[in-house]
Length: 336
Image 1 (spheres, one colour):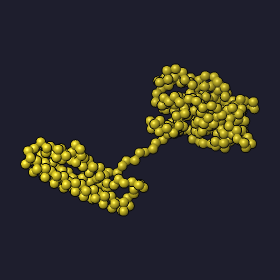
Image 2 (cartoon, helix red, strand yellow):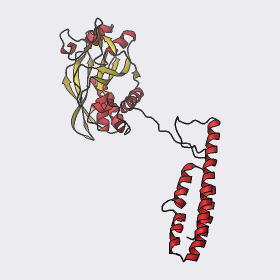
Image 3 (cartoon, one colour):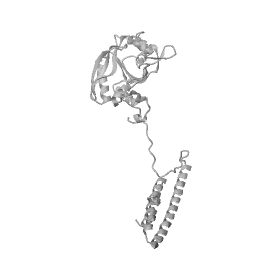
Image 4 (cartoon, one colour):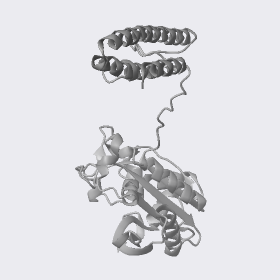
């Protein structure tokens, strides 16, 4: 490209520049080490002496003119930025980059819900569609609600300090499960009823990939005249189907929990779960629990269940370390 063409093109381009970034690119394009005008100046050495003088004067003259135009454009853009700030625009302390008032607004990054919160809200929505009410309870509990009213024997190992965070106040502790809300709710409400209780629970145990001293549970309770194990199985199958978006086979294995009789572990299989996998504990509410809240066990029956929300989220998202939920690592959290 000859000097005249470069001059015409450069003058057209500089008129259209409206921010410092574009001006810097323009300066590099024409006056940089590999710029178009710089290339013309370097090529002069190959011309005859007479032509070298003539074209050299023209090229240097245009270079000076271009440098002056760039300086004027810088001042123009700076004045625009100052006017913007004086009109109410803001600038970070110490920032020297001028603002481009014609540039489109920047889209700020949006936060999003923690994966445990996402799973909790999905669970609440699913159980809500089946008529369950969401209730919450205190993190600090009494020994009565956490153990006694739930039919825990006085010598039950769960009362031992290795499992429970006891507080210095008399008979107070950090709840080891969300089951105390079964008692608190039934004391103040008449059956029939169906509730779920999400919340944090605390266990005095070592932390590893599958255990944490603080974790989330989801308690469930349904009481009525003719509630049976079959009702429980139907509810849980519907919950798992909607949460994992696939049909899963459910089986119940006999197990022991002080506040239910009979008690059972709930296993699932199917889809991505190739083998039977334990997912929660459950059972029919023990008559002693009904007696503790003033319900007549001859008139009412029901089921209760409890699941670790952290474990459910790990299964849903394929996470192999519970500690990731509480790490605060954005590389992990941004995946959800």
